[in-house]
Length: 180
Image (cartoon, rainbow, N blue to C red; front, side):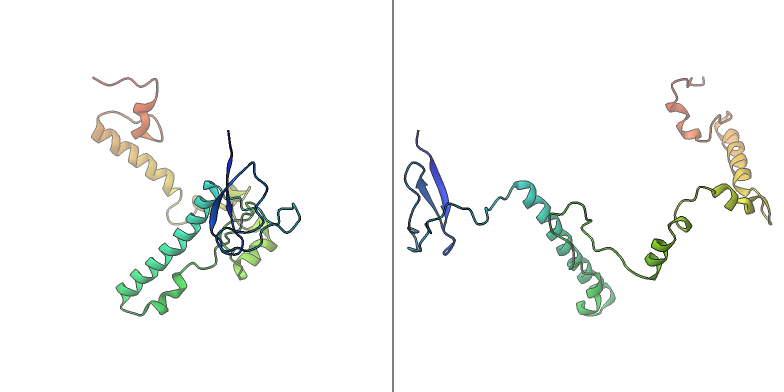
């Protein structure tokens, strides 16, 4: 069984078929450029998979769609597209380093403050102490009181008392019994 290789010329970029059992070609059959330099090393193999193509297309689609949104916004506002150029995404990181996000990270005074004091932003371990003001003021514990009123209203309209915090999900409970 003979093997047919598909080769590409580095000069003219044309592809051609070459029998695998023959010696490597000296010259390109298309442009006659010298192919065999006497070394057997591969300078840079071209390895492209469907996955790589898909990832590249995602980046390109994001960039193209941002141009479309800029055009739509310019049409809605009646201004030239150049004034909406801030909406275009032109700096996505499209390298193959998966440890970095595709977007360029935001660097401004707020992110610098968050980096300097990571314990002062985001979810806090002592959130209950920070919410102590909910029990004082003109409407103390209004959330809990509203929940009670909502259950009473539900009971008056539905004909039965809700047993949980999520009355609409009670029918999903395996112990639920349909009322006759």
